[in-house]
Image (tube, rainbow, N blue to C red):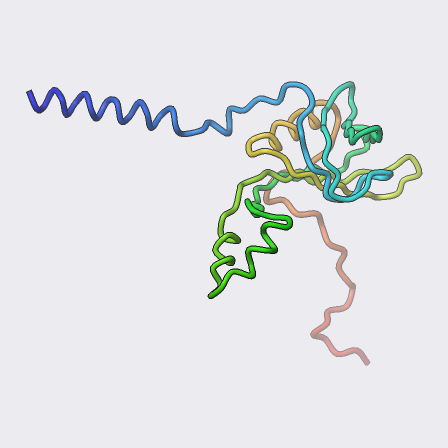
Length: 175
């Protein structure tokens, strides 16, 4: 009888563990995605919260009444990454540092995971720009795939752009 109850308990534990583990990679982006534009878009202030969407060959960012569009064909590189940010920030995070014996510093250890999306693009005049976005985990790679499908360019992982080399070696002495 104990082996049957043990089997049932193990089965229930596996079921609960399966429900508790989030499936971040399977997250689909449907419609506009809530993001933070850290810097880079013309006409949009830094650290602006808004929505990001890829449609009709455009990367479309909307913040309040301000919107900014980047043509996918003008995007030269799209890079995704994973990062983290403080879970407790703002005024509460700063005030907690005043706790005695460094107790407030413990709050800085709590971090939440985010994805980053960096886009390098050229404007209508040929000027080079870059924009950095943060978004929920598992969504940056989907946005990148949508941009590439609509005409954006990207560098494969591990491949570096060639660096111009000088005709003279810095170790050789010139006469």
